[in-house]
Image 1: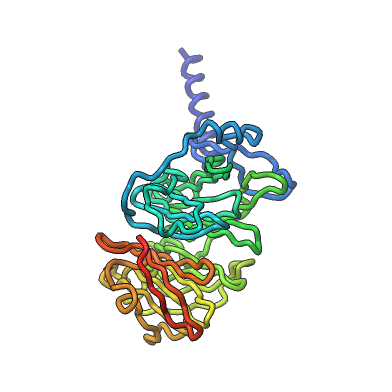
Image 2: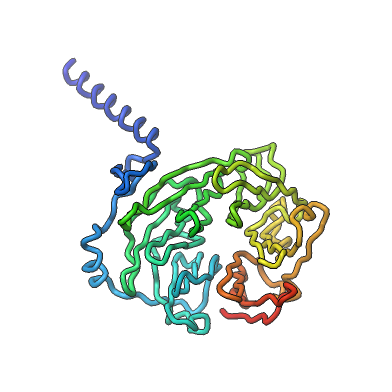
Length: 363
């Protein structure tokens, strides 16, 4: 009898130690990660074992059926963008990412778009270097890695436990790095490819202490700086004051803070127009009221606190719904809008003076 009790205790001890070790390593017991040296010998935090070995990619792609989108409309698109020669739509509430290689894809019916992946739950963005693509799977707290093989996207890696509700993924060509933002924890995850392979490694993980516990939807990389939009105050971080944070991209040290008034606190995105202006999409005010939705334009972020901005959403885009994501492709800008009825993706240009012109609704 004593021997049996001792064995059970020993088993419980082993399981407890194993669980504790898993927590320390950032892994959950039911979602294990594999750790192997990077091919280029570089330091890294973790490596997620490939779902498909590199030497089997072609055969896997050949056996994978092409899937076309069957929805005739979008449900809360969170991104419309082109990466190299391929167009992408993140169709958030339909839990899918779409793609189209046609140059005029913005005029093609949605049912002629193919599906990158539909094994996500309310993802927000996808970013890539033309061969490898990363997408945030927001409600599953993970990041998916895809490899493009001819006309197929194959899921090659999955990074679990990437913060809470990862919300924004950006690929920066200058640093050859994917930056992924955890919208609820103030964490920034950096992913890089190993030299000579298509493997992606988590190489850095940082926490912006001032943003912990605040719902921060996105960030923008611009001229060696990273700008985090303002969020709504929270009891999880009672000292937080709504502001845009500008940090050095290399060190992530705060360079400057731009306070914002409560009526525009719940921002979705900030981008630089390239013509001395900034565009900012606002989802809610500090209290979470979506009636505050706006598309702001300002020539100086320092002026936001004093009301130095103009809301251009109603004048140029009808004012219906909530403006969300902005992207630039060549001379065109694209705006996604969360709306129950009416256009949800718009295209426009900026004239030489920076004025909005040639506004067209696409989807």
